[in-house]
Length: 150
Image (tube, rainbow, N blue to C red; front, side):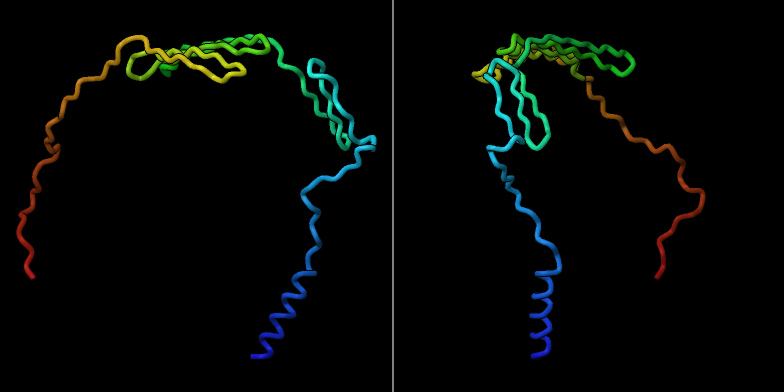
């Protein structure tokens, strides 16, 4: 029993030194070094340089785009359009639903949050349910059936 305890203690002592120590997750740097450069004002392009890697942040730019897909073979029918002035994003998208309606979402996103207006065009149409009566498609067996004897 004493041998097992001694062997376990030796195994624990060897295990602590068997693997090299990993570096800590915190990154330490000297702020006075040339590896770190500050950034410009908010309206200008901000450039962060840290350890030779360049990170560029640009102020939001105005943009606009739109696309539409209408594929009769796969019943895909949807579109999306969006535009931004750099501060407020507005847009809308529409999709044809399986029940025959079209869902149209118009949205606006700004510094106050995201606001969406959802509308449905058309009336939902569901196929009428017709229960089918079950009738076997096979004939009764040609061999005689009897209860098994035990």
